[in-house]
Length: 247
Image 1 (cartoon, rainbow, N blue to C red):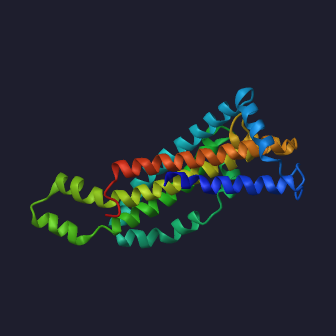
Image 2: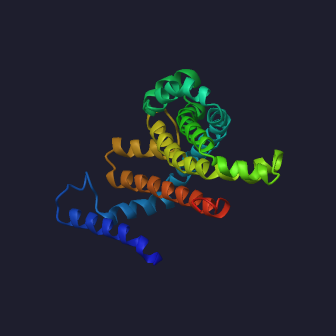
Image 3: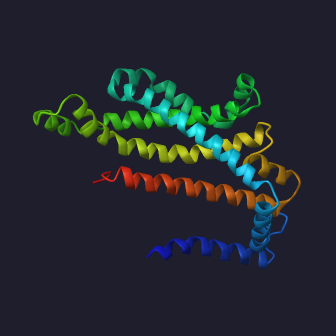
Protein backbone atom coordinates (compact mmCIF):
# COMPACT_ATOMS: atom_id res chain seq x y z
CA UNK A 1 0.00 0.00 0.00
CA UNK A 2 1.27 3.48 -0.93
CA UNK A 3 0.18 4.95 2.40
CA UNK A 4 2.94 2.99 4.14
CA UNK A 5 5.51 5.54 2.96
CA UNK A 6 3.94 7.93 5.48
CA UNK A 7 4.65 5.68 8.46
CA UNK A 8 8.29 6.73 8.80
CA UNK A 9 7.66 10.51 8.67
CA UNK A 10 4.71 10.24 11.08
CA UNK A 11 6.72 8.21 13.59
CA UNK A 12 9.57 10.71 13.33
CA UNK A 13 7.23 13.65 13.92
CA UNK A 14 5.60 11.97 16.91
CA UNK A 15 8.99 11.17 18.41
CA UNK A 16 10.14 14.74 17.78
CA UNK A 17 6.99 16.17 19.39
CA UNK A 18 7.26 13.84 22.39
CA UNK A 19 10.86 14.87 23.10
CA UNK A 20 10.07 18.58 22.95
CA UNK A 21 6.77 18.26 24.87
CA UNK A 22 8.50 16.37 27.69
CA UNK A 23 11.13 19.10 27.93
CA UNK A 24 14.01 16.67 27.43
CA UNK A 25 15.75 19.13 25.10
CA UNK A 26 15.81 22.92 25.37
CA UNK A 27 13.92 24.68 22.54
CA UNK A 28 17.06 26.59 21.55
CA UNK A 29 18.56 23.23 20.54
CA UNK A 30 15.41 21.48 19.27
CA UNK A 31 12.29 23.59 18.72
CA UNK A 32 8.84 21.90 18.69
CA UNK A 33 7.58 20.72 15.27
CA UNK A 34 4.77 23.28 15.27
CA UNK A 35 7.21 26.15 15.71
CA UNK A 36 9.45 24.85 12.91
CA UNK A 37 6.55 24.46 10.49
CA UNK A 38 5.31 27.95 11.37
CA UNK A 39 8.78 29.31 10.61
CA UNK A 40 8.81 27.35 7.37
CA UNK A 41 5.52 28.90 6.26
CA UNK A 42 6.73 32.38 7.20
CA UNK A 43 10.02 31.95 5.33
CA UNK A 44 8.20 30.89 2.19
CA UNK A 45 5.62 33.67 2.51
CA UNK A 46 7.76 36.65 3.49
CA UNK A 47 11.29 35.27 3.55
CA UNK A 48 14.06 34.48 1.07
CA UNK A 49 13.65 30.71 0.80
CA UNK A 50 12.39 30.75 -2.79
CA UNK A 51 15.51 32.63 -3.87
CA UNK A 52 17.74 30.35 -1.80
CA UNK A 53 16.13 27.22 -3.23
CA UNK A 54 16.54 28.49 -6.79
CA UNK A 55 20.22 29.32 -6.23
CA UNK A 56 21.01 25.96 -4.61
CA UNK A 57 19.05 24.03 -7.23
CA UNK A 58 20.80 25.87 -10.08
CA UNK A 59 24.27 25.17 -8.68
CA UNK A 60 23.39 21.54 -8.00
CA UNK A 61 22.01 21.06 -11.51
CA UNK A 62 25.04 22.57 -13.23
CA UNK A 63 27.45 20.53 -11.10
CA UNK A 64 25.48 17.34 -11.71
CA UNK A 65 25.30 17.79 -15.50
CA UNK A 66 29.00 18.68 -15.73
CA UNK A 67 29.93 15.66 -13.61
CA UNK A 68 27.74 13.35 -15.72
CA UNK A 69 29.39 14.50 -18.96
CA UNK A 70 32.93 14.34 -17.60
CA UNK A 71 32.19 10.97 -16.01
CA UNK A 72 31.15 9.53 -19.37
CA UNK A 73 34.14 11.01 -21.21
CA UNK A 74 36.60 9.57 -18.69
CA UNK A 75 34.75 6.44 -17.61
CA UNK A 76 34.21 4.84 -21.02
CA UNK A 77 37.96 4.66 -21.91
CA UNK A 78 38.71 3.42 -18.40
CA UNK A 79 36.16 0.65 -18.82
CA UNK A 80 37.40 -0.35 -22.25
CA UNK A 81 41.09 -0.43 -21.36
CA UNK A 82 42.01 -2.47 -18.32
CA UNK A 83 45.61 -1.22 -18.48
CA UNK A 84 44.48 2.41 -18.47
CA UNK A 85 42.23 1.73 -15.48
CA UNK A 86 45.07 0.10 -13.54
CA UNK A 87 47.39 3.02 -14.38
CA UNK A 88 44.97 5.64 -13.04
CA UNK A 89 43.30 3.66 -10.25
CA UNK A 90 45.52 5.06 -7.49
CA UNK A 91 44.99 8.65 -8.68
CA UNK A 92 41.22 8.22 -8.82
CA UNK A 93 41.03 6.56 -5.43
CA UNK A 94 43.23 9.28 -3.93
CA UNK A 95 41.03 12.16 -5.10
CA UNK A 96 37.78 10.24 -4.58
CA UNK A 97 38.71 9.62 -0.94
CA UNK A 98 39.56 13.27 -0.30
CA UNK A 99 36.86 15.12 1.71
CA UNK A 100 35.17 17.75 -0.45
CA UNK A 101 35.45 20.57 2.13
CA UNK A 102 39.25 20.22 1.89
CA UNK A 103 38.99 21.41 -1.72
CA UNK A 104 37.08 24.58 -0.85
CA UNK A 105 40.19 26.76 -0.16
CA UNK A 106 41.76 25.57 -3.41
CA UNK A 107 38.59 26.38 -5.36
CA UNK A 108 38.46 29.85 -3.79
CA UNK A 109 42.10 30.42 -4.73
CA UNK A 110 41.58 29.32 -8.34
CA UNK A 111 38.08 30.61 -9.10
CA UNK A 112 37.38 33.30 -6.51
CA UNK A 113 34.13 33.62 -4.54
CA UNK A 114 31.65 33.22 -7.40
CA UNK A 115 29.43 30.34 -8.41
CA UNK A 116 32.27 28.68 -10.31
CA UNK A 117 34.17 27.88 -7.12
CA UNK A 118 31.15 26.20 -5.51
CA UNK A 119 30.14 24.31 -8.63
CA UNK A 120 33.71 23.18 -9.37
CA UNK A 121 34.08 21.43 -6.00
CA UNK A 122 30.82 19.50 -6.45
CA UNK A 123 31.45 18.74 -10.12
CA UNK A 124 35.00 17.52 -9.49
CA UNK A 125 34.00 15.15 -6.69
CA UNK A 126 30.92 13.83 -8.49
CA UNK A 127 32.75 13.36 -11.80
CA UNK A 128 35.20 10.99 -10.11
CA UNK A 129 32.33 8.91 -8.72
CA UNK A 130 30.60 8.93 -12.11
CA UNK A 131 33.77 7.93 -13.95
CA UNK A 132 34.34 4.92 -11.70
CA UNK A 133 30.67 3.89 -12.02
CA UNK A 134 30.73 4.22 -15.81
CA UNK A 135 34.00 2.29 -16.06
CA UNK A 136 32.54 -0.49 -13.92
CA UNK A 137 29.37 -0.59 -16.03
CA UNK A 138 31.39 -0.84 -19.25
CA UNK A 139 33.56 -3.63 -17.85
CA UNK A 140 30.47 -5.55 -16.74
CA UNK A 141 28.87 -5.73 -20.21
CA UNK A 142 27.85 -9.40 -20.69
CA UNK A 143 30.24 -10.76 -23.30
CA UNK A 144 27.79 -13.47 -24.34
CA UNK A 145 25.26 -10.79 -25.25
CA UNK A 146 27.77 -9.06 -27.52
CA UNK A 147 28.81 -12.36 -29.12
CA UNK A 148 25.19 -13.38 -29.66
CA UNK A 149 24.47 -10.02 -31.30
CA UNK A 150 27.43 -10.33 -33.63
CA UNK A 151 26.44 -13.89 -34.57
CA UNK A 152 22.97 -12.57 -35.40
CA UNK A 153 24.50 -9.98 -37.73
CA UNK A 154 24.56 -6.95 -35.43
CA UNK A 155 27.38 -4.53 -36.11
CA UNK A 156 28.31 -0.89 -36.10
CA UNK A 157 25.64 1.56 -34.94
CA UNK A 158 23.05 -1.17 -34.37
CA UNK A 159 25.40 -3.05 -32.05
CA UNK A 160 26.16 0.16 -30.18
CA UNK A 161 22.59 1.41 -29.73
CA UNK A 162 20.79 -1.91 -29.22
CA UNK A 163 23.30 -3.94 -27.20
CA UNK A 164 26.18 -1.92 -25.77
CA UNK A 165 24.36 1.25 -24.60
CA UNK A 166 21.38 -0.62 -23.06
CA UNK A 167 23.83 -2.85 -21.19
CA UNK A 168 25.77 0.11 -19.77
CA UNK A 169 22.92 2.54 -19.10
CA UNK A 170 21.53 0.94 -15.87
CA UNK A 171 24.92 1.20 -14.18
CA UNK A 172 25.40 4.76 -15.42
CA UNK A 173 22.00 5.89 -14.14
CA UNK A 174 22.67 4.23 -10.79
CA UNK A 175 25.79 6.38 -10.54
CA UNK A 176 23.76 9.46 -11.42
CA UNK A 177 21.36 8.79 -8.56
CA UNK A 178 24.29 8.72 -6.15
CA UNK A 179 25.99 11.83 -7.51
CA UNK A 180 22.79 13.91 -7.67
CA UNK A 181 22.37 13.63 -3.91
CA UNK A 182 26.12 14.06 -3.43
CA UNK A 183 26.12 17.22 -5.55
CA UNK A 184 23.34 18.74 -3.42
CA UNK A 185 25.23 17.94 -0.21
CA UNK A 186 28.49 19.45 -1.46
CA UNK A 187 26.79 22.58 -2.82
CA UNK A 188 25.07 23.21 0.52
CA UNK A 189 28.39 22.77 2.33
CA UNK A 190 30.24 25.13 -0.02
CA UNK A 191 27.49 27.73 0.41
CA UNK A 192 28.29 27.72 4.11
CA UNK A 193 32.01 28.39 3.62
CA UNK A 194 32.23 30.39 0.38
CA UNK A 195 30.59 33.79 0.71
CA UNK A 196 27.31 34.17 -1.17
CA UNK A 197 24.14 36.23 -1.01
CA UNK A 198 21.77 33.35 -1.60
CA UNK A 199 21.64 29.60 -1.06
CA UNK A 200 20.23 27.20 1.49
CA UNK A 201 23.64 26.45 2.98
CA UNK A 202 24.32 30.14 3.57
CA UNK A 203 20.84 30.60 5.05
CA UNK A 204 21.25 27.67 7.46
CA UNK A 205 24.60 28.99 8.65
CA UNK A 206 23.25 32.53 9.11
CA UNK A 207 20.28 31.28 11.14
CA UNK A 208 22.71 29.28 13.26
CA UNK A 209 24.85 32.34 13.99
CA UNK A 210 21.76 34.35 14.95
CA UNK A 211 20.40 31.56 17.20
CA UNK A 212 17.21 31.39 15.11
CA UNK A 213 16.82 27.69 15.76
CA UNK A 214 13.32 27.26 14.33
CA UNK A 215 14.30 29.01 11.10
CA UNK A 216 17.49 26.93 10.92
CA UNK A 217 15.56 23.67 11.26
CA UNK A 218 13.05 24.90 8.68
CA UNK A 219 15.84 25.52 6.16
CA UNK A 220 17.38 22.12 6.93
CA UNK A 221 13.96 20.57 6.34
CA UNK A 222 13.81 22.25 2.93
CA UNK A 223 17.21 20.78 1.99
CA UNK A 224 16.04 17.30 2.99
CA UNK A 225 12.80 17.62 1.03
CA UNK A 226 14.66 18.93 -1.99
CA UNK A 227 17.07 15.99 -1.87
CA UNK A 228 14.19 13.53 -1.59
CA UNK A 229 12.32 15.08 -4.53
CA UNK A 230 15.42 15.09 -6.74
CA UNK A 231 16.13 11.47 -5.90
CA UNK A 232 12.53 10.43 -6.62
CA UNK A 233 12.57 12.35 -9.91
CA UNK A 234 15.61 10.50 -11.21
CA UNK A 235 14.17 7.23 -9.88
CA UNK A 236 10.95 7.79 -11.85
CA UNK A 237 12.96 8.71 -14.95
CA UNK A 238 15.01 5.54 -14.49
CA UNK A 239 11.90 3.38 -14.36
CA UNK A 240 10.50 5.15 -17.41
CA UNK A 241 13.55 5.21 -19.69
CA UNK A 242 15.70 2.34 -18.31
CA UNK A 243 12.84 -0.06 -17.63
CA UNK A 244 14.92 -3.12 -18.48
CA UNK A 245 17.32 -2.60 -15.57
CA UNK A 246 17.53 -5.66 -13.36
CA UNK A 247 15.47 -7.82 -15.69
